[in-house]
Each structure stands twice: as C-alpha cells, then as structure tokens.
Image (cartoon, rainbow, N blue to C red; front, side):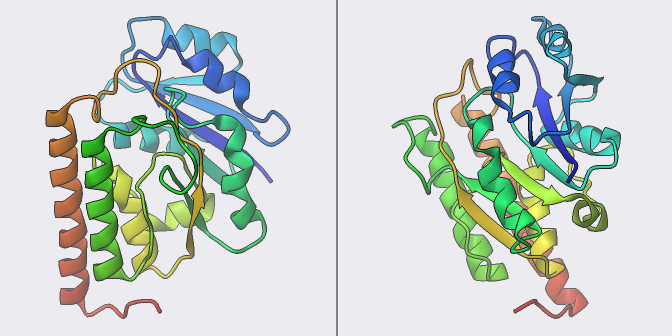
Length: 235
C-alpha cells in the first residue's frame, strides 16, 4: 500500500524536523511538505530530511492540502498531518488500521478520545469543535467528537469527493461530502499535545471564532443543499 503524507506548513522550523523524524519509515511511501511562504527555513529543513517540498504561495490551509493531494505520486492512502508536532506522527498506524482492515474509507483522529495534555487544545477551540460535532450528528447522522487535522483517506475516495474548500472549510468538507456520498467514516482516538510555536487559528480567540463561524455555516449549507436536492441519506 502506497501511503502519501501531506504536511501544510508556514514557519514551522521549530517543529518540522521532529514531525518528519517520527513518521514510520516502514509505512510511509512519500512525504510532501506544502509550504506557504515560510521565512524561517522550514522548507530547507524539510528538504534536507527527505521530504518533497511543494511551494504554495496562495493562502489557506485547505489550499495547501489540495496542492499536496494534487502532487501526490499515485498513493493508495493519503494522510494529512499538521507540522506543529501537536499530533504524534508515530500514531499514524492507528489511523491506517481501519482502512487497511477495510472497515473505513476515511479516518479522523479525535483529540478528545485519548489522554492528552491539559490545555493543549484551547477551551474556545474545544467548544467550537464540540458544537460542530453535535450539528454533524443531528443533521447528518454521523457520530464524531472532533474535527482534528490528523486524518487519512483512500485516495480514490478523496478524488471522488472533488474537494475544493481552500480555507477553514477544509476541516469539515471531507466529513460532510463523505457522509452524504455514503462512505465509511471512522473516528480514531489519538494523542494531542501543545503545539510548538503559536497557532495561526486557535492561538487567538478571533481566529477561532472566525473559523468556527465558517465551519458551522458550511455544515448548515451542505445540509440545506442536500435536502433541497432530495438526495437519499445513507443509513
């Protein structure tokens, strides 16, 4: 099985080496670091450690993920992972297991389902995630607890979903489209630690509120559009 790992970065020089060093070499086929205008040497560090660096000057977390997905070399499974070392790359087998065992098409790493360091996820970010998860359960029938960035999916499934969200919507687009299309989405508990460096989103209340508002709007929009189209919902 070919496994491509995509890591969006912007000024992650303090952490990217640790992230890359902890990826299981016997599982991962290729690592793509998609860098957005870093000025601290992040791409140079990643390149020296064997990652393939893709430069994406356009802003947006989702844009970086889409660029990595387009640049991956014929993978069977694609893994998305942040470059701040808050998730632990050596737990990648936990995400892959349900896919390998043919129990899932997409897996989501839940930062709330396993022991994590207190305060690693700011209270406002945790609250926004829980609210989004409740709405997804009520409107889509999918029981999840978190919208964590550590996730994996079969490459053919991701292509079918025709993902296009460039910014905050990336966190839920895979989940919403995958559920509506009837794909199997399984949540996997993962560890979570304080990130190295300051978060570009959850590190500020303003950034968190902006992301949460956009995500909640997207959840409602997809549900409304789906009901208007009269699409049957998967059991």
